[in-house]
Amino acid sequence: MWSPETGLIDLFNGIEDIGKGLIRSIKGENLINDPARIVRAYRLLGELSFEIEESTRRMLKEIAHKIKGSKN
Image 1 (spheres, rainbow, N blue to C red):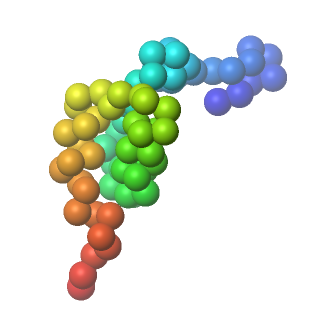
Image 2 (image 1 turned 180 degrees about the vertical axis):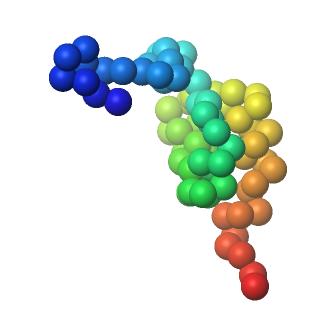
């Protein structure tokens, strides 16, 4: 978030994670609602040599089937 008064507001320490080269999911619900985040996470892993935080990696594996789409 950005505030004209205080500048960047980093509620989840994302800047620190970027500095560490770490990919971390804030909420599993975000991954479920936007499964393309799975692809983005692994793209950052490959292109920038980032690492995926362990609980995030488990979440990615648990919902990977969503990337194929749903069958009704």
